[in-house]
Length: 582
Image (cartoon, rainbow, N blue to C red; front, top):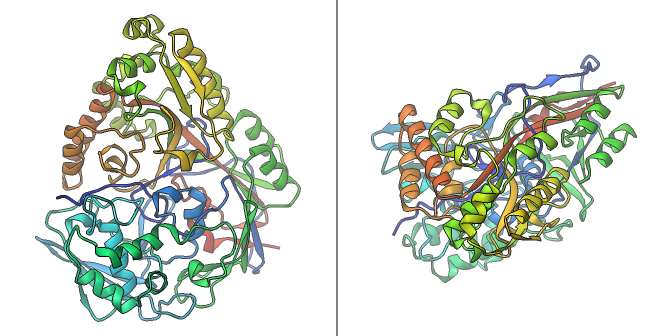
């Protein structure tokens, strides 16, 4: 029995990938930089106050570590409410936060890492962040108790901590984990950024925190038992809400901010957490987040002074509009994200490899680029790798040269018809109906595939994220965005047991390569493994990558401290540095 299960995670942990709400095209700006296209006012001293932010998706859960709750907005909100051993800056450097705690390598053979949380770190109800929280987080992130079924529906990767045995503790705040093999991403393997309060979870399961610790420490690998299953049931489902819960335990914070108000599908308000003892103390008193799905409406709200920061989808119209507005600063750059079309391997229609190949031959990627991308960026190009992005330069070029993506360089309707041999398969495609570029992408794919004999059903949905992996569609159009560090995103999506493997793809060779990747410390060997995986994906007619996405942040000139970030954290990466200036 193996517990190297891999799943998908939002920004609550470094090294992972998240679902994206928006899509557009690449720009020439390097992925780790931002560019001011208008000039703002000189930053002045912070004066408290409120910053108002517009976000695309509506908040749904205080536990985005659950795969079903893996929305970017959930992770962004939780990110203000959790402290951790590290965070990533906007140049994708790992920055230790010693005001929360410390970590150190005790031994390299075997690999041993010690984590210590500072004595003054507490939850907002005064309960200490200590052993119970650490060991529960380890149990979730390691998949230790997963057997025939997954216990905690963790959206992140267990590939790393799955190599560790039961942790050892010195007192209540120091934990040491020992790996059975070297692990390339050890520095980002264990995270408290998505920790749920152990005392709250335990109480909901009818036990106390000490009993929860005993259950985990005394448990048997792969055999959780009924009591731990009750704990997992609450961890999996108990933090879902669109309104402020009556149980304050659901929204406890040990980070800089805490939620004070929620209006379902409309807004959420954060204020300073008075029990936060760390160094990342916010300059502002309050952050109000409004959920505005439409880019034009977000821009209008910014112009009208209803919000201060937006991150609208870059289109010709939106870029022209925001750059022509006085009193605002525009930041643009590449995102570490891409849009793609995935085929479902548990779909009856795509169980046949010939049908998969035929469908991919109809996808008009050149037309998608020419019509939807090049009007904004004349250098936009078709994405030809499932692993690398064009902004990665030589790594991307080397992969494309050998991965077999050239088989789908051009639309081949006649070739598709030959593979179908007169069949007219029905294909239902899932996509986000609130994203105009994905709506247009669907239309272009539908029109082309119909020419080969496919019958296309419109599976577009506003709830596309929660429908992923439900088996209710045959193909899907959506996007991934990565943290920009580590290699865990590869097994998260493409391994058989990956929680990001929403299309039920399974290839034994890819599974073996993905496992090998995570214990390969030589960078050249690791890149060679990634290229092999990329080649398998095209040979299996997994789907097709479409394009790398750009990003855009626009803020009022009187808001200081806003800096461009290319990964899934976006503008929130340094929220504590935001300020309202005179």
